[in-house]
Length: 402
Ligand code: NAP
Ligand code: MG
Image (cartoon, rainbow, N blue to C red; front, side, top):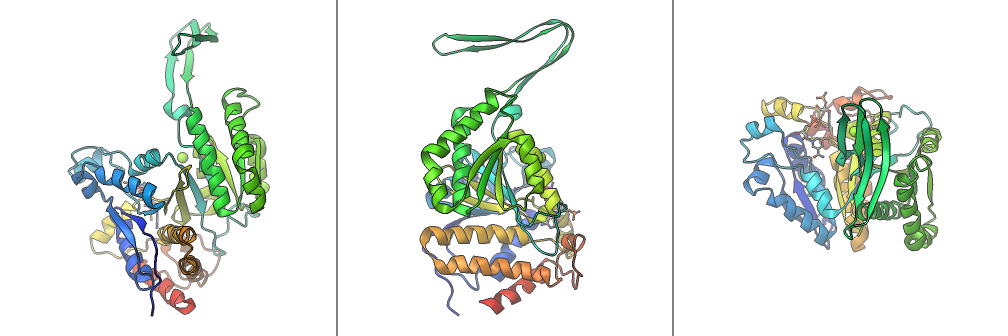
């Protein structure tokens, strides 16, 4: 059989633990037999990050800027326990945070929808993608526990010495204070990432905030989105047949619940943090969530939303079989392959991605699923294979449709 040719490479970032095992299985069973896979490989596994002083993570981020498409395996974000477990030289930063900062990107999270698992919200038929502005606000705030009576003021001194001073509150007793900020450049990047992603996936874009109460802060987000939309995206949205609209967050929440899904919901940092957990839980399972990092100039990095599934890895290492779900990692690969195909005009690569996704979902809908899905399934479960068995079941369906 002729393998599918690729014109340009995908930046491949290997990772840790159970997902590293799954990574290799997916390549061996589902990709290499059918595609003449061109990747630029970076080993982001914790031992290699440690050995390279985390240089490998920065190299990978630069490679994404060059090749425009990357796919990443889940990686360990070290904490004190990991420093000991892996005898690390340093408590390295999260690779995702490093890559996100270097690409100035926004993360879009979307559930993989199958008939076997029904969302808690009955009328949701299509995925809802959450775009969270992962910069600033309360995550970078300065806080103060006010000990007793006194005056709290907001003071800004410009480079030219010009000052703004406003009273926050004249405390007659103790209390709390918080000073938070965001940057115009970051808000603009966020807006552009959202517009780009809406165009690239052909979905409507919603943005919501609380501008009625936060008349300067949230209002600035709203105005910047509108300005960038009007000046740079309006015509392209019209051509693509999609819409952008802003609505107050209270109204958005009500509309989201009543909707059928099938759109992107952009949110400020805290709103996105909370709503993404709500939406993903309501759709079913962390093992069925994909995640894509999009930069404002249109670079894409795909990955699963879950972590390295450590608990399964410890059992696997002892020689036990585990029924770990590879679906989100498979969809990270198909997302990257499809995007590579789109950018290079390689029809065959795009079709392969569609077929592999279909074969994966068909397997589940035939009642063959990993343990985590079996627990949620609305259809009769015929078989609960281990990870290898599940991937081979997908392979046989893939071969049938190739
Ligand atoms: P996790 O790896 O997502 O796993 C948490 C639990 O969720 C698992 O123990 C398992 O539950 C279930 N689960 C998640 N993915 C699954 C899958 N594909 N198939 C079946 N079950 C799945 O989160 P964690 O245990 O909190 O974190 C482990 C490591 O991952 C940490 O070192 C963390 O730093 C890293 N992490 C990386 C990323 C990333 O690279 N994007 C994201 C999050 C976490 P049961 O054990 O009950 O079966
Ligand atoms: Mg959260």
